[in-house]
Length: 370
Ligand SMILES: Nc1ncnc2c1ncn2[C@@H]1O[C@H](COP(=O)(O)OP(=O)(O)O)[C@@H](O)[C@H]1O
Ligand SMILES: [Mg+2]
Image (tube, rainbow, N blue to C red):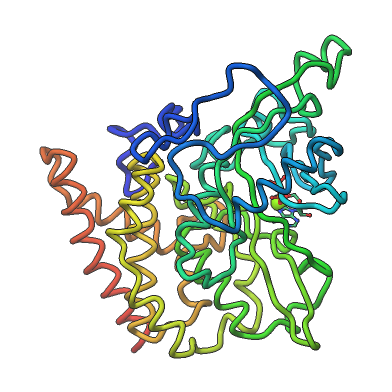
């Protein structure tokens, strides 16, 4: 079911072509180049994105590297995820083509089970970019991420595999490209109590905002600097779902989640401007049913922080304790939706939904703070 039970008017599992990250995606911004007509090995920014210096420099390094080193498929993970190297053979960035995402046509990894709820195959790349852009002031430290087109024969093709001609033809693919972050380990390699409270809180705040359904311990890179642990969040393709039933927050039962937020984090959250964030997601052509999730989570986060709730309390409201039982947030959304008159148009029904949800969340928080 969709958020707040609006599935009947907005089918949740229906494919949303506008979300596919083609060049059209960014057409509201200034175009810079057209798709390649003569395919040649290389990587370029998909037109229309804000050109950030850090990532342009990495793209340049990856372009130099591609002349010598083919993209290298990462064995970890569930999607086609390639390390692009620089001219010295060092990893520069990670390219994840849309058509190699889990359950997409050309995914090179064995597919087990089914796609998570509330997202569709081929939609992960734009979510990776969205998570980076939502991470204002690099608060959580999402590595720089943009949408690129990359051309090489090394990429996977189901057709080539079927005809035993793998890696023969040049393939030009669109996907997310993220700065490579050197790391010592992943969070699964350590006891969680090793991580500083602030590091866990920054990840939790991000995950709540984007309603992450894939924050498992392999998606947190770890570094140790002078004995202090730092965490870098990666892999945000499974975020902003249009259903709220699959939150996955590895940190939920970490002790740091029960510690109070510090003032800096509170101010950061208080200053988040949801209207600006919504506008940014709309510019990425992310469909309204996914944008609505960000509006819900931001409302919960702001109210929760104001009431001095902990990460654990907010994360628990968003998580199912038993698989078949809706979370507290799901239940509040359902009630908020039921309170909207049936004959409302979409715009009115959405604003009434949020008015209802606002008082329902207030009441739920009051009950907790008693
Ligand atoms: N920005 C990054 N810096 C360094 N390594 C990365 C980065 N992003 C991904 N990786 C490596 O690639 C692996 C797979 O990437 P991930 O984004 O988790 O893809 P999947 O969706 O397949 O799980 C990660 O487990 C990690 O080892
Ligand atoms: Mg992963």
